[in-house]
Image (cartoon, rainbow, N blue to C red; front, side, top):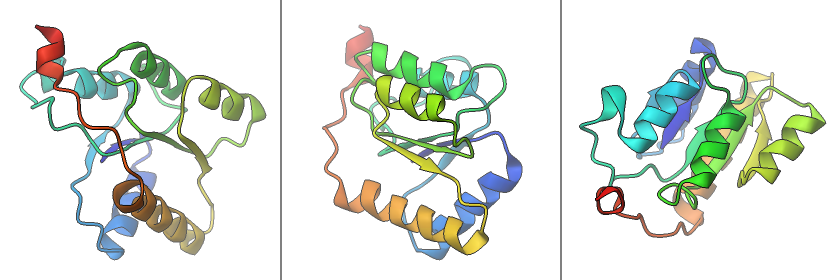
Length: 148
């Protein structure tokens, strides 16, 4: 799982919720859209990352520094290596235009972060269970082969 989130409190809450629900999958965290793209495409600080080990799901915030979440999503859907990567927009934005743009750019789900702590825990629990255990994702593409 890849968590793309710039708010330290939201990172902590999300990680705590996943741990509390005994979600065993490792969670990598990046704090802005540029870092997310580097992670996904094995560039910059992530040039040594094994790209064949793609995250089961990307949890993507929208409002971030450097590169916003919608731009990250757009880049992911343009590139055949990440086109079918499951992406859940996990954001505090309830703006209709963000919701519409997310789905138009290929988001698989759009979740507004609940303000209430217990509701947030429940949302993350359901998200983790569905995307990591219930959903059947497409097989990973060997990104290294795609780059050759």
